[in-house]
Length: 165
Image (cartoon, rainbow, N blue to C red; front, side, top):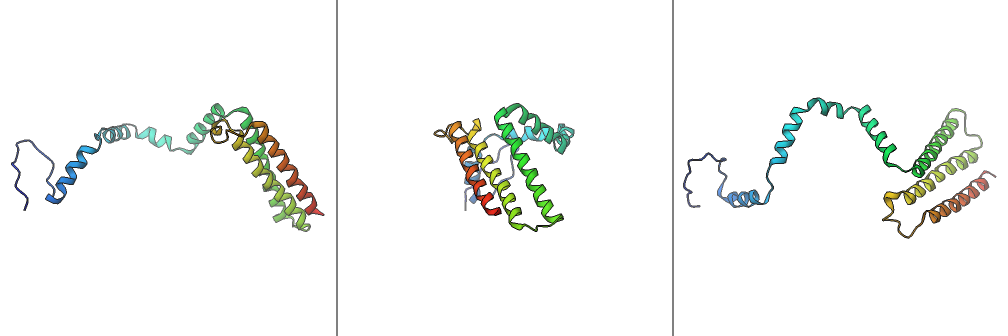
């Protein structure tokens, strides 16, 4: 059995079994002061209205849009607009195929694969030319990335035109 500890007059936390007392004493010394949790509790209780308004999807989207407008370079925004155009074209092609029909099926496959392939090539160009990714693409210049994009686009469209017959 473990030796009994002398009792003190100050209030303390309830005692734990003797097997975990050594563990709890080492844990208590190695863990940081629980002030952040107290601060989090007081801030969440005092600002319940701001927490409910920060979960509003409209406010979140507005903050996302203003952050995008402020932090994204113009070149990347232009690439994003082109990617949005490719998504719209792909959706229109698919809707036409579903609603009207796909009689020249190879023409639909060629057009849709050209749209998807161009989207993938454009996403690759966006990743390589984004200033936030310059550490990952140190050896690839913007001109080299654009040349790869153009060459990949030419090869992609060559195969798509040949697939139509």
